[in-house]
Amino acid sequence: MRYDGLRVLLLEKEDRVAAHQTGHNSGVVHSGIYYAPGSLKARLCVQGSRALYAYCEEYGIATERCGKVVVATEERDLSRLDEIHARARANGVEGVTLLGEDELREVEPAVRGIRALHSPATGIVDFRLVAASLAKEIVRVGGAMRLRTAVHGMSRSRDRRVRLITAAGPVESGVVITCAGLHSDRLARMTGGPASPRIVPFRGRYHALSAEAAGLVRGLVYPVPDPSFPFLGVHFTKQISGEVWTGPNAVLALAREGYRGWDVNPRDLWETLSYSGFRTLARRYWRAGLSEMRGDLSKQTFVRALQRLVPSIRAEHLAGTHAGVRAQALSSDGQLLDDFWFDRADRVLHLRNAPSPAATSSLALAKEVVGAADEFFAAG
Image (cartoon, rainbow, N blue to C red):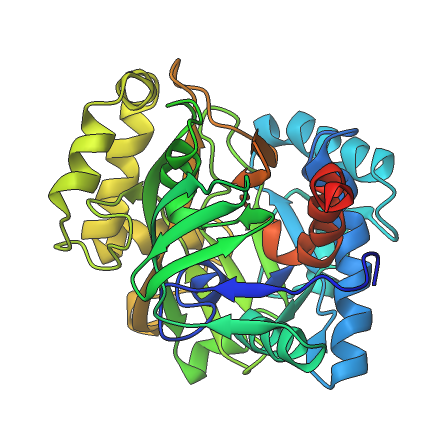
């Protein structure tokens, strides 16, 4: 422990941990192949994946290094695939290789492509179990956790402590660290943080493959991402349970916690539509946005996207469906924030943007958060 004598209190607005992004993600332990060399994402993902595997082994949480292939299906994908390979090498990701058609078939027999990048260190885990274990660890070392305790406001007490107005009554603390995901911008604004970046929620739908079709892929199968669109494209993701998920697509959510297409929160929707950054983004990506909406409404359109990677997939192979919501931080000029982002106030540190691979990076990111808050802790 870096600071003896500190007492830790975790406030969680839901009745359990990992109720939103962490509990709805695809369960991938990323290796760090995509991210810009020198970025926090790149460094913390590589460090975090190693730390996460070690943590899970120590605490008996199942993981599997099932590997991942990023598949080029057209000639125009090849230069982007080479760029990803160069980034992976620059980031120190171990074991990454380029595969030809025949080599790809040896790794993933049902997948078709003209070349692929293979990342054997990429794996899977149930992040809900990881989050539950970390929550128990907080209590085990003398901390405390309060569920159903949403924070509605922050102010200063007379002795410069931070006063939190919560659903369960006021709480005072010498130092506050927020990591609120879908609501991170709102908490930052409570302490005078800037209006930008703002969180814009995107819903992504997953379809599970039937038991008959689950054996078509052995691990994780991704397309080469389209640089004209800020998401990775629909892909195949093996789960630690043995299931295989396909997706997600990316459509605007009408509520920050809107897991169904008809979930609407008027405040959330107004904050999105009235934001200049979103309107700029929508103008820039409207064609891609319409394509994602078609995939959300039409199973056949969704299946055609999957067939680019696995031609033998059929509509009848798609079984159950569920969704997650991604907290996308967006600047006022329509730029998507592509790295972790901190905001500071007096004795308050906000982790304002924690996009994927935040779950993979969590243990390394925690050290970064403590380091960023060192001046607050040292002040006592």
